[in-house]
Length: 370
Image (cartoon, rainbow, N blue to C red):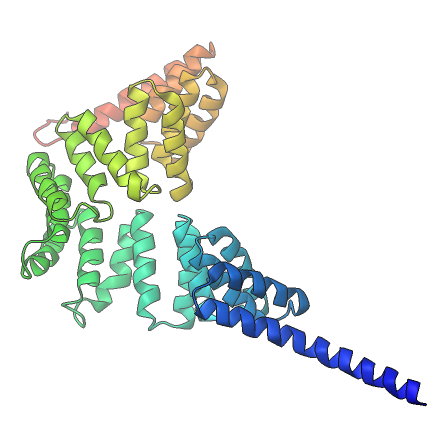
């Protein structure tokens, strides 16, 4: 009888301990997380989830700890698992978007932020981050659509003014963009204002004026995102390719996923016959803007230079199908056809080039069309 009681007592103690163990591990994980011991917290969260894999909130905490440690890919995996159990949780969707953003998966970040906006239309953090993503993706019209409704109600919001002004200028709505630039200038000279002024002048082809403003912006705040990218563009436009390459590399030192710097540095490297690094730059640019036609064209030219003529041909045929007015793609496709001994197809591309150039010339001011 006594032995039976002792066995029952031991069994009860084991079951009680088993029930308490996960909570003890979780408590320790949270304490470590709050104390700033991120790696320790990650370890303990993982131990807890081995015992209770169904705990969505804890998996979300693990994602947050991984993100804080800079382990964004792992964080993304954990947030996705957490969302399987709570797919309409706006906080977790926002955290997932931020993790995608940190690893330059900008389109995926934008998709998650759009879901947050559906659930929380008034979430300004999600709105501004989405606008920033769309700006990085070159979707200027989308940024204007997102932010214009806030322009009257938040006329002094600097983040709004900067994002909307940048989108307007890049969309070549320079007159409306200039109004926002003037608002920034009211607060005195700043790198942000100079960057907007410089890009305004760049898009109206005042390259010398753009260069002066962008140089001033660099003096005021060389750490401003995308500044060296546009500075490089202005240097290229004024004939200083060596200086442009340095500016693009400067941007990439702090922002390795900057689309324009990767693309334009790749172009310079290709001209200098550094084809391997040029390809790396183009491929990096393509990860930021998947499917971008300019980057795909550059990669096709590298394939052609490397003797992968049929591969180049396939890429160029797809590009000219998507963008029939892409003159350079037609020119390069003609070259590919000639190298493949397909003279008739090459002649056909040359005829298209002549036609497109004639149409372009006819549209120039002062040209008489008979």
